[in-house]
Image (cartoon, rainbow, N blue to C red; front, side, top):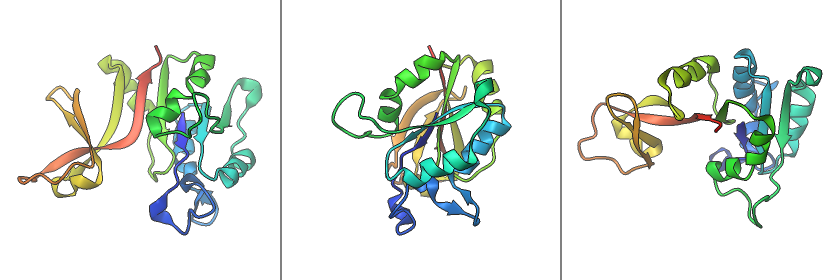
Length: 194
């Protein structure tokens, strides 16, 4: 499941008429192509893309450039925001997933990957799935070290010495003794489907 409903206010005027994941990159790509390529190159071929903000150009891009092999059960399927559970748009990433639990239930997967569509990186998602499975975790969060003095810009994941999550702080204030690094959430999650 790819979260592609973001407005991307910090990228205005590029996002004035389109969702952040639909912003062109290097002339022929869109930002969403990075996460889609990561999934497909990792052997993940059942991909739902949750949309919301100004999704027209994103939907066109997916229809033109991301037709997999539906006869083999492979797809990239845009899922428009439908306000399934009330009269409001998604109130964040967790609410977007919650309002689309039926999409997950219809597939009956063992694991669910929930990734943001607005990051530029290369990743073998199989490594994260293997780590998740090997640890016996219920949820795995991908993190990246950031300098402690920059922690107020990120969602910070607190972990114990076994790498188990003990807390999460969304853009916390700078600590007085901010030295070293902190682990910032990359917005990439693996969940057990049950």
